[in-house]
Image (cartoon, rainbow, N blue to C red; front, side, top):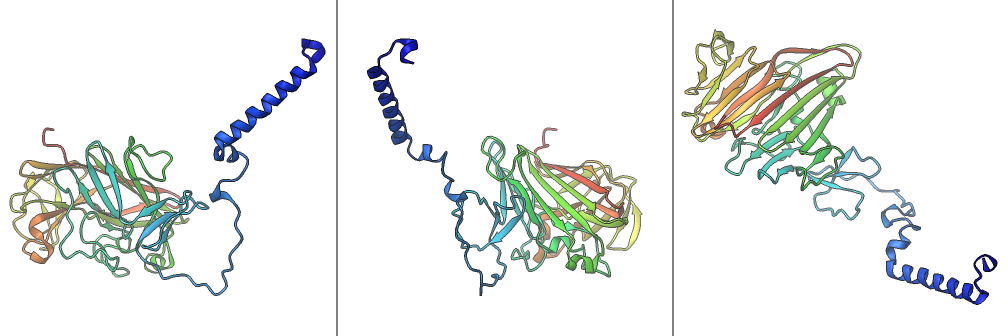
Length: 369
């Protein structure tokens, strides 16, 4: 280099000294950031294995759900008083709340029964939870959107409305807030969304001997709540099921609420009288105990409660509609709700390896439509 550029040995030594000084200053200024490139981050450093001799698993408790770093799609239940100190170990509370900051809407959902219990707009809650409801996991939640699966109604092999509403589901993906203020463990979700799954177990198999995967997506998107429910047959033989979303819609007074849709001319089972009838009304009102199963009711239904209205659209899967109200039952809070249930009252068959899909869209802002 001395021959090529004509620099003296003294000049080259001075340049080298200045370069070393610059590197030393860089390390001093950047400190932890520079060392981070060559040493593991604290949460990734190896640790001395702890002995597990004599330890036993703690009893399950309702509290926090956590996604473990070593298995990012499988939440595990944490103690309710535990504290998460691992940045690679995101925590999900149960119940989970989804939020859309643009519309100030919130949805609350429990892992027990994968039950949505609330859909709050800035003005009111679209759903209703009965005053006699229990939220401690000891029984199905009576309110919001309970599941009926794999059985709608009573049966011999299992409890009424099946087992799905009475077991804990697993949250496999969620985004607590819509894009713009999003938080959660999700790579692809732009809206506030949660996905829950349920697989067959010995408990379910003893009642319903089929291998299955049930997948439930709850999507809150600026003025609309979308409920997407799918059932995959994991076995080789076909199975069939009946089911419903047993949705409790809040009303201020059941005596003045109206349910509008393409009811006229539809066959329906009046479960109160046990008779099959033909509906002669387009608008249903509730003046007595009502439990009606309408067959082939796949179109939009609008619940009108004074100046409020909610549009219910079965976009796929659900073929029937159930309207239920225990009129006169004060302890159930009959005066402030009506169940409008998108259903498969007739069995749906799923071949081995196939998937049955359904979707319902709920819009509480259709007053000007």
